[in-house]
Structure formats: structure tokens, C-alpha cells
Length: 54
Image (cartoon, rainbow, N blue to C red; front, side, top):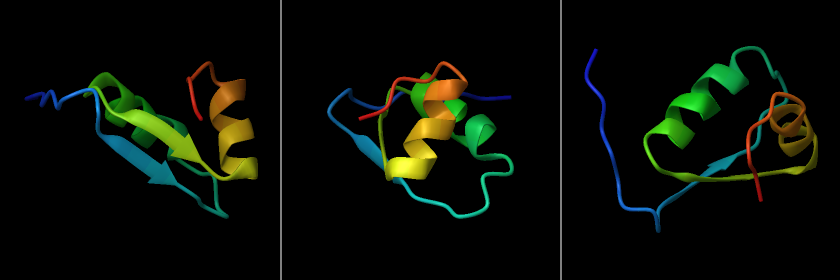
């Protein structure tokens, strides 16, 4: 598996109604260096799984 690192000033905006798999996706984005930004419910789910989110 290859990995991509992007500059720290990039963000991923996440807002989903079906939270299935979102933590895995968000983890990959975070590991690639993106800042996670999410809507209320999505942010709560990500925080419950230890991910930093704005």
C-alpha cells in the first residue's frame, strides 16, 4: 500500500448521515496529513474514536 502525504494546510470536510466506515476513511485522511473538519454528528463520531476534528 502506498501512502501520500499532503501539506498540513489542507483540510477534509466530512458530513455523512450513514457513519458506517467513516472512521476508517477519516483515519486515512488524518494519516495523510489532512485536518479533519466535520458537521456535528460526524464530528462526534470521529471524536468518540479518538480522531482530532474541528
